[in-house]
Image (cartoon, rainbow, N blue to C red):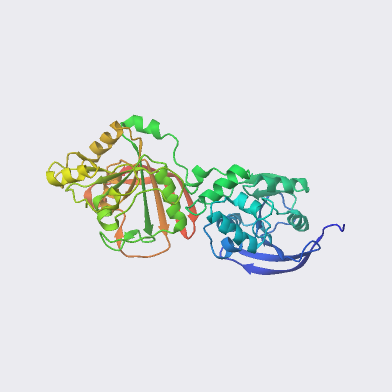
Length: 439
């Protein structure tokens, strides 16, 4: 049998959204497929080059299919290479783990009937994974790369490259946020194909939640509080007070649902219920639903709200002593626990009393999602341990997430230990706040 060989045929400058790169076209004597390498920066003769060996996924790479994580991984790889200024993406034309587009679509139909991604391939007479990485190894040799940092979750890919003589200095994970369409697919890759995936942490979109939640809670005898919201570039969370508007994209939404699953409860104000009628459930990732908590000083909670009919733990409402007793009785008859707490002169509920009550009932972590008045009160009173903000590339000129803290003579927070990550077109920023007095 003739020994496999590859030959560099032509290359051209290809500026992408991420970087100014060169696309190198290779021919080989194994097949007639157009394997290419997207090269950024100077990699000739370099050690520890960041490399992604990516197998073609027409549905994910081109159309953004949510059934897999391929398109997201390709974008991530391009962004991470751009950040450091050099690296290589080898794009192998072996669709559907080597079974081709036609049978990949047939496998999708089987998956819709209940097969997982492994059994679907086997049912069609294929191997679980028919990919070959020999061409990729020869391309790396042609590029003169001496060792690579490989972007992959697939240990089989690592082993294949090592067996072909490629020195891998490190493996770096490249995990996409699960969604309701691909969570089963990712779970199968982890459980049956040995892919190195931490689906629980991935659900948070790479955002590290503090591990000392219970320890911090014990200090103040209140739950750990995470505030999260999406805003436009100008700080708007909606056009006007009470208007319904979706800001963030699918990846950021999946991240938010992952964060929900990590908390015992999710808290909003009655304004959010009246404007959005939300489910407050975990739908886009795998995880448990938190208990919904609503701040509603005048018991305006509608008996037609979706929170009364979803599969979450029963909703809990905190209200004032002056709210209508008839409405309280009707809500309790509908399965909602209504608790009365003290209010201030502006009819705002005592948040410290709300948090103490939840803590005494066993809740150790709360995710606060809004709206403006609730977010402002939690921040101004220093009752926040962690903040996660999604910034979308739009300008609304509408209602800001934070009210007039300075005008109210309150304190202002500053984030420490900050991190950020791009999810789709959105930028997510997170950190732990400290408070400074406003003079």
